[in-house]
Image (cartoon, rainbow, N blue to C red; front, side, top):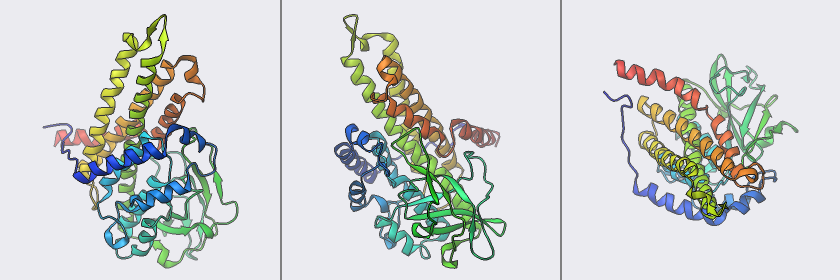
Length: 379
């Protein structure tokens, strides 16, 4: 019996079309000079560019048509995110997509139709999930009291400064629940921006204490637990897709430098010590794309099964380690210049450090894969 189990891999016409469109869009709208121009801004992206992405339908790709979406499912977001990663384009698309998926899976299409329609129309959203930096810790310190008032805060809430809607994971009467909080409900100074190693990304600590949650904005029940589990896997998949795109772009940067830089009268790309690691990156990027589209083949609109979990975890572990290796080699190959922030290699190694920590690092996922795969072999 195969240790891997399900090896299904498909790439639909819709995914191919989206990948082509997204690559061209991101290439034209987010060249590296534009990326650098946004590093020191508050939001990290151009609001006008976000509006263009919404107009292309990207905010609603994964949402049902009844909610203003395209009805194509979360798998079709993967090629768009891969293209964004290749262009190092930082926008709230991943955060917004994951927030929408959590609401859809926990609350259902009918109940969440109004909120999801707003998201498809461009309302930025995010999930306030973490109590600390440990992705394996599922304890909830942020609570909703019997009076309907939130107490506590969340750490590293992605795109919190841009979000208009927060899906807050809380403890409600001893069980996980989701509370919908609009940005205007937050107290002054409730959002404290984090300083991140990857300046193309944004996150913040958010204090939700004192926010009153209406009954209509509270989701409880067993579906919340399942949806939260799926959220962590889908988050891992989308970060893996982004990291795979970034690794491919990093490889392009390395190859271009090896083709132009001379030392001792020879192009440095002629040296075996640089050729072999570069080929290793190429092979790893190609494998990474197989992993993410294998996972995209298995995820659907229902609760994710064991095969989908294995695929998402494998994709995340592989993609982020590939980007770490590619970023490290890019810095080393550029020599002394590679250690300066003016060198683009720095953008990739910093993205690698950020990506590694989002939705669990490689060790986190391999620890869980061991049980899943070994149990499968024994079975």
